[in-house]
Length: 367
Image (cartoon, rainbow, N blue to C red; front, side):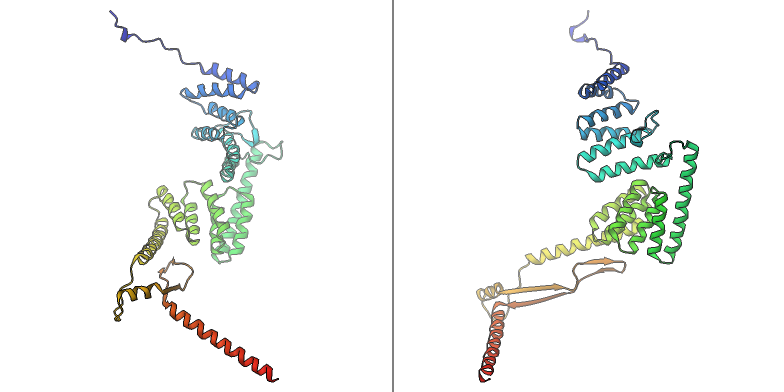
């Protein structure tokens, strides 16, 4: 006997991926991107063993202006192993990752995220550069010739880097920077050249330009903590200590035993603590009531006198700061002036001015 509740409805067999792909292709040929997207949604819902369905869905979403979805699919593609795309060279893209990054760059651009779009293009260029496929002005150049040319360019970049290092040791910052930039002209995606140029610009206190090189280091070599260290150093020098702290903590998460990062982070945290303690003291001082005077005045008179007082406070610096010698506490000058004293001073100055005017009138009249 079979009980009714034990009966199971027969389940439909899972869709054939090849059939879904063929149907999606038919929709694409007629530019029916909505129909193609439905098929790619079904295809991507299956256990995905290839990045191509995700990449195709990203293409459909891009045509339909669903840009957030494009970024999401592109990120998923980047988690797959990078492979070549045979017979495909769209926009200089020869690999799956390159094509996903170009899709991502277009989506970010439409979303108004210009920096993210530039970073995606840079990541794509790095991939193609490492494969020796980023420059192909001569279509007759075969792979062997292209590989040889790329190696020669890297050798030239290394020579300029060594020349820059020699000038850096002599503290010829401008000359060193010139040589590092010459090297970048041959190998734009060399993280060491970017880090050296960044450090030189820090020596020249040109922090805005230095920050760009530090960010390029992070983009080109995310696992190399040097870029994070330089960025943290720049932000600290610009008194952006909270941002510097975040960057350095990220660096320590990558390389927990790096002493250079630890030392800089301790210095930055000390500055954070110092500023926070200064703010707490100021808030406490604002809340604190002045003590009652003991000069024989009654409480009402003393209260009225306090209301007439004006507190003048000044410091001998525009801002608090810390450096390698420690934190400097600004010197304060406090003056208490009553309204009566201000009134008396104004009267005296007015009387003096009136006397000068009278004397001048008498002298002029006598002439």
